Length: 161
Image (cartoon, rainbow, N blue to C red; front, side, top):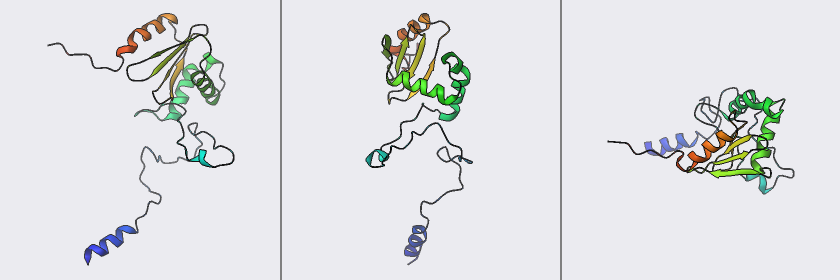
């Protein structure tokens, strides 16, 4: 009898809103974010597809914080006046790299892109989300270094001993 009462009590819990802040549910999350793509017109099946993040996030930084940080650091190099404009340039370059862009894949699945004529370097994750885009100070020398390191990137080096 007590088991039935306990189950009925738990059944009323539901999946409503929670006051507990998590990574997925940050407090004060009312601001618009740069991470979600606009819903396609007409609704339909496309609305149920997962939304591709604008950039990769990590444990220390949300996608929006990363976009703003990269914009502050690199936006002027690409003539971007806003974080949104910088993000649009990243998406355009990584989705359809211009002619003459070199491409190398890292061991972890990341794709490195470099266009020498504009000195533009970008990294795209294995799932297709851009990680970063900037103009390396060392230009072609930086690209050569990244290309050389790509086959072993992220792999553990054997310990000596």
